[in-house]
Image (cartoon, rainbow, N blue to C red; front, top):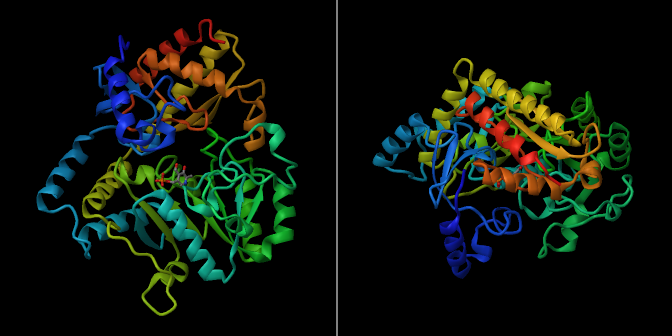
Length: 441
Ligand SMILES: Cc1ncc(COP(=O)(O)O)c(C=O)c1O
């Protein structure tokens, strides 16, 4: 249990002089972690240590990137060997072929692959490809879905007070960032998610103008919200009917629920899929995959879809990707992720039941979220904005941080299980949650 965070406080004071808000992403700073972030210095397996030497079980796992936990011995070996020979050549390498071949072997819709450096770059490229392929410019995004920080995606990705949301059939349009020309959003059709009737309505109105519909298969940026039965399948059939491409944003879900991500789990075939996070096991990478008929538009020609990048296919990362996908392809990897995650979910539900707290744990296996709510389930953005006590969640997580559990106090993220997590980690979590619930209000 952390005795003190004196060093974290000192680093935070110092970081204010040189970094905006003392961090490199607002989700890591004092707006989320109060009174300031914990400075992490070391990680091993499922555990991290902060600048004061306090130890935590890590359930944030770099926002899901660390599917193999920290400093996995095989990845340490691969990185050391690769570095010794040169980290990157910005040239054709066998490393990127090895990585792409493994990815194709796991993801059913991946006829061809293009690697990027982040999930945001992957979703940017996916939209450009969809526009070039269809000759249309508009696209549909759903309320509360986050697809990276590219201008046109930054509409209603943040939560807002319920009275600001407007009617579901005509949602109020709220940009998430300053500095984006208002005209950017003229091409964005916004709709509520997980509602087949609303989807049919909006597709009837806009379907033939849409280059693409982009969706997260499991909504992962308002916690963890599962698609209703048949929703993704209906989305697939409607996009086909209107000639709009379906972009499945698997940046969070990819390589997490199944070797082939949610498209394998739910049995749908998107036109374009985007990956990131778990693909790189802690190294920055993204990928756009799909059929040749679409991705070949990037082939060099006068009319090509341009995608450059000094760091695309970084040799070091590609070697990590290949080794990571080999580890994930080993027998039992996904069974273990699911078993450990389901044990954590069951244990947390039991804790909340014992403490008579109005709380649900939503999701399954390797990714889930806790909502303090009187509802039986949270089905979409509007439910999240209206019925979830995010303040109570933040207080709960701050108590857990004091009990040696590392997690973000932001309710919009989700708990992550890596292959490094064990039943013992789950037991530590359940005991800590039990203590954190006592007198929580
Ligand atoms: C669903 C989804 N898509 C895209 C992104 C962007 O990925 P990155 O942060 O690697 O740019 C994220 C990041 O959280 C995400 O959750």
